[in-house]
Image (cartoon, rainbow, N blue to C red; front, side):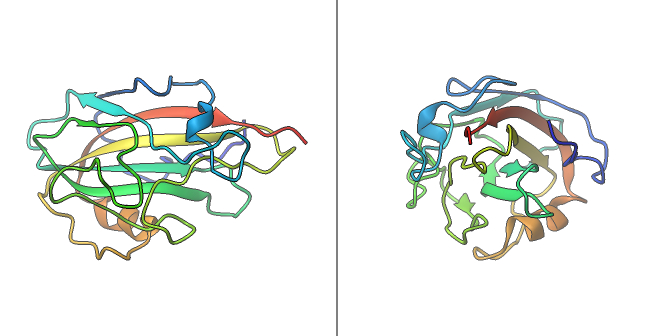
Length: 177
């Protein structure tokens, strides 16, 4: 694997648990979670469930980053903010263009293609495996206050001082040369 650690410059916080019926930590993405431009890909966001968030959690944000993308900064595939603290699950497909599976009040920020939806994995052919880090961030505010057209990078900057805990899964994808 490539060496970019997406948590290296973030505050250390307690961890909690995130699971998925769609993906398994350390395993490859299933075909449906690959980008529509990849054979079999459908850009379907994964199902996620979480538990054990720190006391004082008032909302959640969910992000998916490919830190291995050959961009110098990684590639953001999905960012969802203002998930109420009472919600502990997102169904598979919640990240469609309408955000149809998101709870009331939550919204998607544009990914690195500037589309406000989940974009499936599409690593460079022949570039080896890329990691996709799925993170649920427990926050100490009910609303993070970022504009709906903000970038996931700006979200990261904004939530850094509000993160109470972090739950993460890492999956992979590789396209042969």
